[in-house]
Image 1 (cartoon, rainbow, N blue to C red):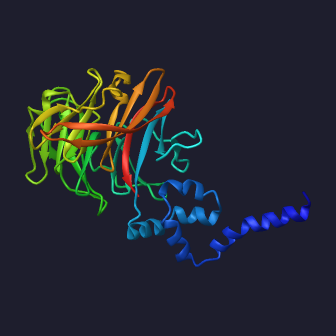
Image 2 (cartoon, rainbow, N blue to C red):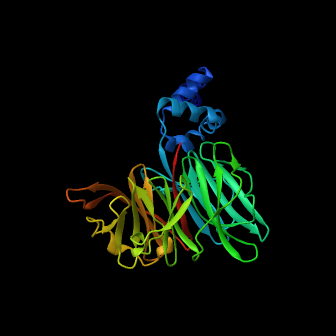
Length: 353
């Protein structure tokens, strides 16, 4: 092929990009705001101009105005001595891994506690006996900023979000170990004054928000906190099963019972438990490692993360249906292998961006 032909082809192939970049900035933002959020990592490789746009607050403001926001699943993996965060692709194509590392987010310490609020992820970790680390991850720009530290030295254990407020339960030592709750307003970015006493039973190991109430569990009991009444109560019916790594979809709590290999559901209004039907072909494949399993509300569906043999971590996307008589049935829409390694699955979060 002659050099003149090669040059002509290169000029021709560069014209579409040149045409787009020559448009006014607000028109480019409007065009790119209509493209799926999952394509932004590829767009950022086209040119530096595109990279700056798809990570700017401007484009995510425009996406919200256009009604183009999307639910994205962020997956946290513990790798040897640090933590990394990935995005789960919506569709796996050409043999590519469904997990995409977010390179702009630095490696973080182990044993972080994560909670999603709006388009941000808030992370809490204990740096030392006297200092807590608090980080805010902007899921639009994938940048990290510190936010005000917890006003008291607290080993934060579980957290939930109710109407834009993060309710965090942890332990602190005064004259003896005590459990307290602190509240962070994500709108004002300020910790509310004072602390809320928590029932003095054991170490918290589970937390969900259902019907604007916070449901927590320790190794022996389940509790409900109503922020309107500022009151804690035991929930004996919820306590019938040792739920953990649970989520809530349409005010129903779901968790994977790894011992019985069943997906269990608790209806808070009817105050009853049942087993989700229709998943008999999927759940026998799960291993009895509850620390690697988690259910996540993913845009009204249920994303189930679970371990299989040979250190494999899988994700199944399940649609839920309540049939006549109140029975809940699940339909597996897709099931994907995420990773095979000695890495430990820590958390998955549904974020709207």
